[in-house]
Length: 303
Image 1 (cartoon, one colour):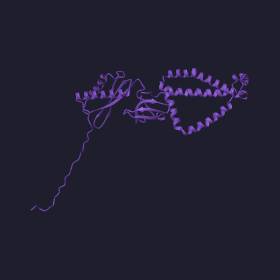
Image 2 (cartoon, one colour):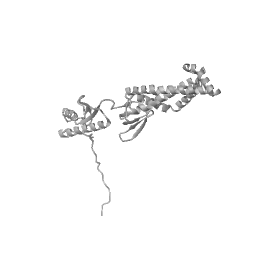
Image 3 (cartoon, helix red, strand yellow):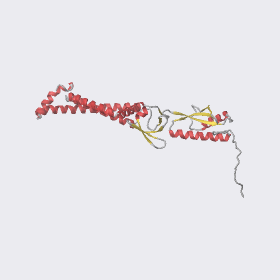
């Protein structure tokens, strides 16, 4: 029994002798190996459940992971504990050679499966990075693929992320698409800056329009006073002068973003109408003339 763990070697002879006396005879060695296998597995498994899993849970608490994010990682941890328990059990039973052979078969199988499931593994690894780096959380509004796709995160798993678009469509997105490309999370911070360009006529007073834009932002209770709103002349278009308004909102969400921006633009438009400031629309002027050539109709006179 030289293959057993050193701590168990001293008791191996006593246990085998005891089993032979009980009546196992030639099967005593096999029964002894089975006993040490069970003991090794149970000890390591209990240590994992009592010590390792609570430590992992405390680490998750420090990182602020929610329950949905914890579950897949806890499953991986339990699998790791199970694997270690099996390895220790084989060692305790003196079956290291069998364990090495089994590991070789498992490695070959893992290589074949890995080659066949490259995309799945890529998404799985990307899911781990999402859990670790936390570029977004459930409930966040995100945009990716240069703004082609946008929506609210409903579910994050180790392979895919499910996003509900603002048209109530559900997108199932492979995690690698969210980690390999630029992803925008407008609501990650505690405030969000919004911008909108108001176009006024060339004959309108720029300072008067600027004052109206700022006043309406300050009168809106959902727009922050610090940082305060600002206006810059940013565009000289064919038909209008563009004044870009910049303002901040607190605790942003998609619903707040749409509602606050819409109310603010409506208020500014109403004030422009009251003050006689025009919001022009594109005008096209056609120049030139029409030339009519003299023509003569030849026909038979009526009788």
